[in-house]
Length: 124
Image (cartoon, rainbow, N blue to C red; front, top):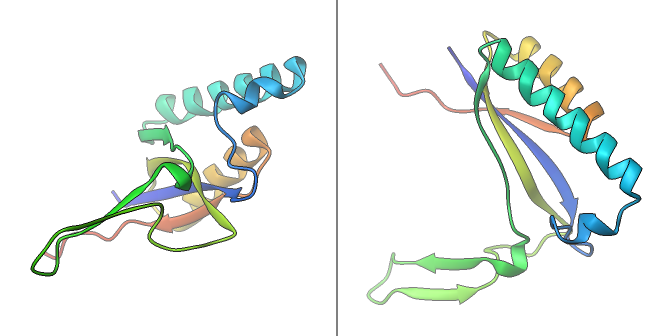
């Protein structure tokens, strides 16, 4: 079954983390966490859940390039951008329409836009 990558964009200027989320209104944070929990449960119950995770901000990244004669390790992301992927789900869905339906539920749960992209399948 095809797999889809659902991603949450974040603003680079804000770089939200689990720690900074503690500054949110406690009732609002609790509601979002409950909604995300319910979304994750629905994915599991439907057999669509593969993996999910949150990412640390790009400022914590190290870009590694071993394509030349010497390995280069550069602090920071590989590209400067105004937004970045802050978290993700990998789901299984029979088609794009179903994956987009899951993304709609995800967007409502996390109160953010969600990007949907299919993972490339191995050639036969």
